[in-house]
Image (cartoon, rainbow, N blue to C red; front, side):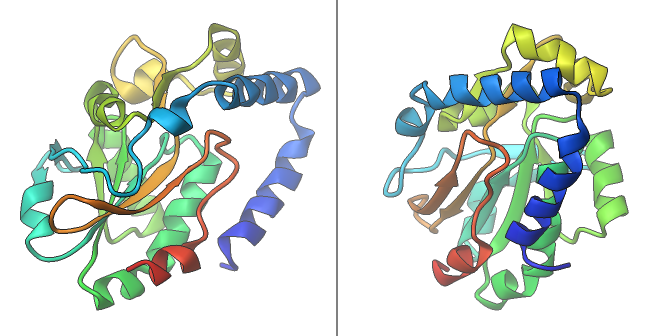
Length: 211
């Protein structure tokens, strides 16, 4: 797999065949988020990341505090296995996993989807890092990166076969903004990437340089 930016460009070209009305609604959804204040109100570099204990795809508890005793922790929030951009990012992170482990950094990916979907995602993409379940987006909310999908966009998701209630195990339509944080052993955020436009993703080389 070539670099993430290249793969995203290919995906964008493929998705150009989507019905125009769906593309317009997705564009409007992104613009609405860009006009908000999520980017400014979310946790910043230098802030303390909240402690957490979340279950992985096998429903085993994973505690941030225990991992931080071993070194830095990389937390990547993703929307769900239904999101092709998230899948590309997770695969790219997997390809660079040795760079993280070489400096004793632990990679975790977190989404609001229930564990059974993450278990399938792990197997289908041969991922060697934990996918954690952020029930009802509780952690994403505390980090300041969660939002309620606009009502006008829900029908377009449904048309594409994306039933967020089924994926997330609730009746809401709340999602995290894709974001990546590097957390130092004292819980301080030393690196942060966040973009409310889910088509834009981090530069992994930049992430590696910050470790």
